[in-house]
Image 1 (cartoon, one colour):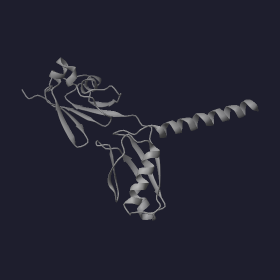
Image 2: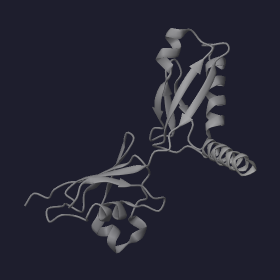
Image 3: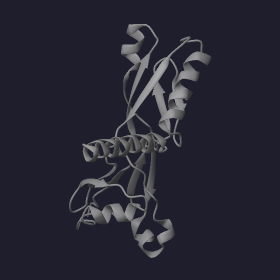
Image 4: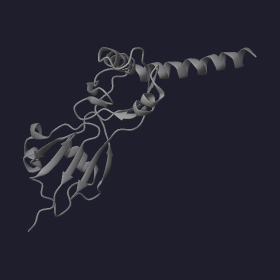
Length: 186
């Protein structure tokens, strides 16, 4: 009986520790979570309660508020910031926000003239060149001098031939980025 009670207590500790750790982690561009609101009219709750993703600028686009910068905040900080924004904006008097951060994998999309176009699992040290290498490298028709990195609404062009010669030109990527390798027309 004591062993079973100890095991149950241990399992509860592990689950609570995992939840506390997940909620303490800062959210970054590309992170997704469910946001639920209470203490507001049911029609408004239905419009606001949804799944949200931190955009390329580190913001959420919330109904009635617009953009709210949240990158670098943990779940508890975001809950407070959203509640304050709705109250300070005179929209609601006593909203209650709850977040459920999704523990999903993060990806970078690599498409176009690569050997295996795919969603590449993101790693913190990933660059444009390493993402392309993970997608099988350039195919024979790739225009390596005009690769496009899209992050949110921003598109940057990268000359990968130059980046091979000078690694300082190889740009770091973030989860949710897209890399498009165009084909060269001969």
